[in-house]
Amino acid sequence: MALKLSFGQYYATDSIVHALDPRAKAICAVTVMVSVFFVHTPVQLAIGYAFALLAVVLARIPASKVLGSIRGVIFVLLVLSVFNLFLVNTGDVLWQLGFLRITTDSLAAALLYSLRLVIGVIMGALVLLTTTPAQLTDAFDALLAPLARIGLPAHEIAMVFSLMLRFIPTLADEASAVMDAQTARGGSLSEGSPLHRIRAVAAVLVALLASSLHHANDLSRALDARCYEGGAARTHWHPLRMRVRDWLALVFTATFVGGLILVG
Image (cartoon, rainbow, N blue to C red; front, side, top):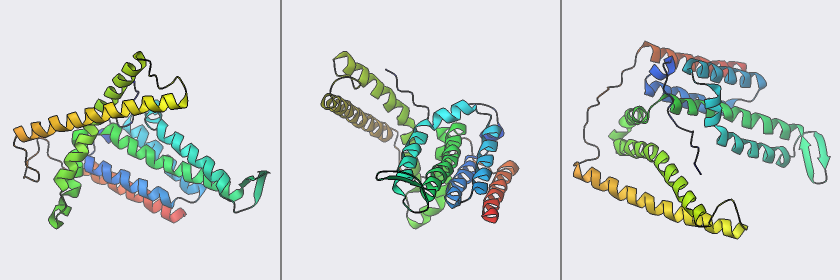
């Protein structure tokens, strides 16, 4: 049994989005992800999806790859849409069966809230698909650097972020190996009674926790052997530089936000 982990995997290709400075990509993505919460009309929603579609085209990433990367998040949003559809009771009643009721407001909430969040999810996935973990760490470190003046351990936070990205596929592979071992011993997660499945999941979680602690111990010993010191001044092999295309991307994103405000 293999775990198909596609979210956050880097997709290597030659595109203008890949060539952007990771700081510019991060700022643009976060700006769009925040701005979608102010989308309240179909026109704003159309503008948001046009922007996301343009970003996917410029990134030269297959649509199937992007959709596969956000498939799990879309499933969660669909579940939230169902809750909004039946729990919002304001507005005119469109359909009713017993205590279940669909109103104009519940239908609007079910569609609008989920569809606008998909835009933000797409932008977040594009950043991960077009930026390597090392570039993301450098960008995160650079963006948090000004906060180090007030005592925030910016470099240490960026280090933890980098390690998190590094060990996600490792733990996914180990989870797959543990589940295969459990299945071979008669502890399959897809067979048996609910209690049997819960016990099988508990066994997998205990094994993953032990493996995570083992990796953390090995990593701490490796950092100590290399005389790692948090917060020490370091240079970069590939220094980050903002170029004209990066500033244009920021201006284009600001124009998009301005357009949302105007039509809203």
